[in-house]
Image (cartoon, rainbow, N blue to C red; front, side, top):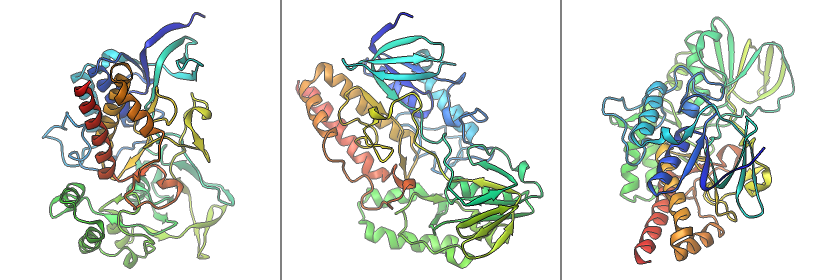
Length: 439
């Protein structure tokens, strides 16, 4: 089969929230691109009901619309502070229509292989067998679709599913349910299960801080942004915010939950106003880590034994790129090691958009990442000094993306302090644009 020449174009894989803003920003800078999307429309993870979508019926944003929206396209004023998945999907499609992104997308097209040639171009193979040669590659497939399971001794004879497979609480009707994992999905699903199940257990390996969705009547992330913009030191912010949250929700330890072993926001935030309420009403029973599965029973590390019919593994996701050989990811210990989780330290024509977990919404972060990517691509053709500067920057030491707050676990590998990350991206954009004006 003849290889089609698209070396003047960039290949973007995925038309979810990150892929469409990548396409929009490249197009705005005059950079030709093609977007491949395996589904029949835009949405990615927010396309409810599709095989690779992990959203469930009750899914809402955990970040407010203010702290989630793209930089130049606010969510509608008619939307609530925390839109549901249907509203988010409509917003993404409106964004794509507004900026003409639909014209750049080939739907029902799956990239099965992307291989870098010696000259730096990328050979992209589609599920039809067609092969195209592109001048650059951007992955925007997300990282919340390949389920990860813990290794627990024993065997379980009931029903098991991962949070990625969960859609509605009807499956819990009259059952004894165990939810494993204290991420935002785990907390949401435990609360969902409490409305239908006979009994709900929630296994948490460690203690976490729970953040309410509202503080003084404002979305919690909007409220928290004030102190960041005022540059209030974090050692002052943390005790004040912890006190406010305890006044609103109470101390998790009082409800039988493990005491956090870290400070507020030193872990990815758990934004949930309902879990402690359900625990306090006896609808959810907190449990520690699991020691063994025993048929229809589960034994916990405190020695307790409970009958369980359904286990939901809300245990996160693996970082996977099924179309890409690991050697192209600068991997170490199975994890991609890219500058700011986006920019390859060696390749100048390969980028990953949206592979991070900010303590805020992600749409605007992907937007700014894409703007930097676009400026660097353009600089390679038009602004040699700017391109050389960024080439050296992305090959150099990785800046502190957590502002000293990160817990060193697999779960937190992609966590970033959104305010710090935003400052860095804006600094890069300013430098590109200043140098562009001088050249």
